[in-house]
Length: 74
Image (cartoon, rainbow, N blue to C red):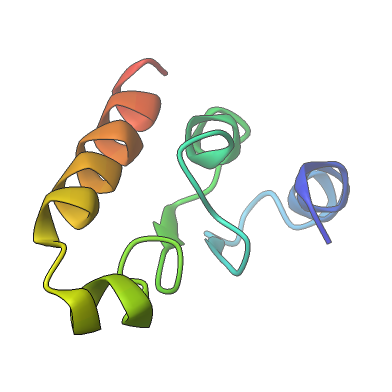
């Protein structure tokens, strides 16, 4: 449901650590952390089945680095 929904829920449940999953990518991972997510779960964005089938591990490495950089900016 996105960052606005997470912000609203996390304000109400501020004493409960929340981990965000679904739709996480390098463009929004840092924002979720900045708004208090205890963690993020990434799957399809990071390890795309088509890229794995092609053996394109460089793309997975590139996306991993982008994701870490996005979080470290926070």
